Amino acid sequence: MKRYYNCADFLEISLDVIEQVSQDEDNSYQIICESLGERLKWDYAEVWLRDALNPQLVQSDICYTTDQLTSDFSKVRKHSIFHYDQGLPGLSWRTKEPVWITNLTTEKRFLRQKEAKKAGLKTCLIVPVIAEDYVDGVIMFFSKKSLEENKHIIKLMSLLSSRLGLNIIKNQLSNMLINYEKEADKNIELISKIFSLRDPYTISHEKFVRNLVTDIGQRLNFTHEEIQDLNYAAALHDIGKISIPMEILSKPARLSHEEFQLIKTHVIAGYELIQDLSFSDNVKRMVLEHHEKLDGSGYPFGKIKDEIYLGSQVLAISDIASAMLENRPYRAAHKKLAVIDELNRLANGKFDSKLIELAIEVLAKYDDDYFTSSHGSFMVKN
Image (cartoon, rainbow, N blue to C red; front, side):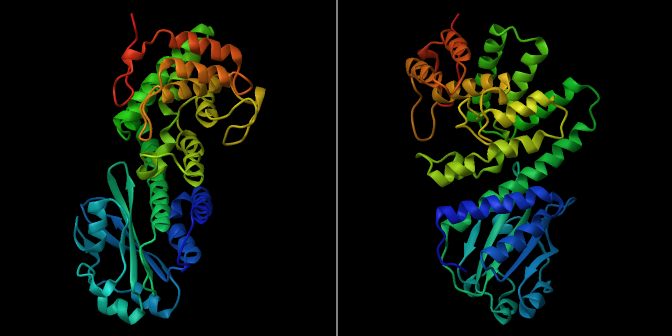
């Protein structure tokens, strides 16, 4: 295995495996085992899946082997079921974080030391796959080399396990919607479900964005249906961030270039999460386009001018204003005048000047004194 991985390596591998998983969601675990086994030179990998009926992890037949010794090791079933905090799979279930074991021969929780020694396995990385607060499975990677803990590999594993969790949540939501007959009920239930996955900061951010897009939409004489779509898009626009590790989302410092590139993948992830659900095409388009800019400097596609839906521009401006007015892990909230100055700057080619003008009119309803919550919550000035 390559001893050190820099951020660029981490980004390249992450995006490549994410693409593979997106193309074949049903075989996500096998793809991650094989792809990371090959790319990162692991010698063996296996998967433990949560029992659908009982609170336990069961060793599956999903594995990655590189020779006869690891193939023989894959057949060992010394203890094929683990409960919470039992054995290495259960330990990762409890921590809900990757666990790196540099020396398996001294790890008391590992019950297959004799068999691992015969196969030549020395180092292990255990990765939990989490959907909401629920552990769906645990992936264990093994190496025949004694490897010191590598933070870049752990970040990569966290990202990819989050991606698997995203696919699981997507399937859960799709199944949930089958039981609803009324369109409005489907959407309300879905949004409530999504809110349950988010922290208080995200919920308050989405509420503020919904207020802004509604006010701007009314000033644009949008129809009731168009404003409803804006509201749904505002509630859903960051849902793709459930595919990003929390350590990156909550980092108390500015993101590196590579970390920001990973954050940008939340747009595609969010679109994929809702693309088969019962929202209008405009809602899905706004979720996909809410980081695009008129001059082509946005993402994910670098669209320009009329290629960007008007509602997407409204959502983008509201998202920026809301984010600036809220506390972030790495900075305090901006004052309203600073936000207005930034919006005026963005009117110079990034966004439509009329929309910026309307957004500033809306912000005039709010007073700096009301932006006091650590989560960016607000009140409208009467």
